[in-house]
Length: 71
Image (tube, rainbow, N blue to C red; front, top):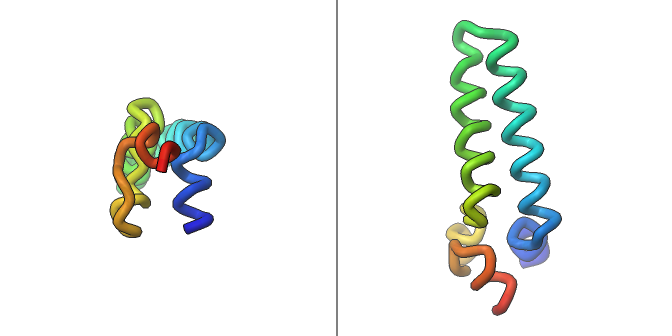
């Protein structure tokens, strides 16, 4: 519950965005098969930007970050 709550928080959202950008940059710089890492980073970046927490689905909480923070 603690990890899920953190990832749904605004700080967790910022972590997802920063991690997404880092993964995109690393995947782009290394090229080749590492582009798959950039795709994972894009998903993380989009989830953070849209305030969606994919981890909450694993724990049965709402995907929407605002709804998860309210509960």
